[in-house]
Length: 147
Picture 1 (tube, rainbow, N blue to C red):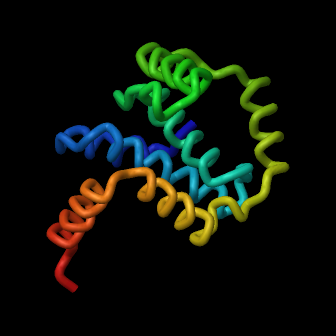
Picture 2 (spheres, rainbow, N blue to C red; picture 1 turned 90 degrees about the horizontal axis):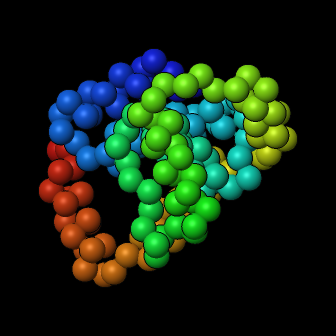
């Protein structure tokens, strides 16, 4: 279950008209913090991100399932299931939650390190085209706060 503050921040983002991916970012950030503080681990940074996105969908963020080029059929199916769960509020199974938590506790914590996340960010950027990367860099420069 996501923290109350995380849900509040995501709701605030939604009220401000920000994109679903921005709203979901709050849940991913929370998940990274959980791994870093030792609440549980993750096999890879991608798994930590996926857990965050799943929580976002289940909390009602209208984040669509990835397209056919981006995600495997299994990932797309799970994302659709998460979206459906977000529409109706069913209580999660206690047994399953406990089993998942125990399995995640056995995973490493290093997957949420700055180094590991930077590596994922770089590989994600490489998958985008040079035009898109340049546009993102220009927007970042434009919206960066004056130091």
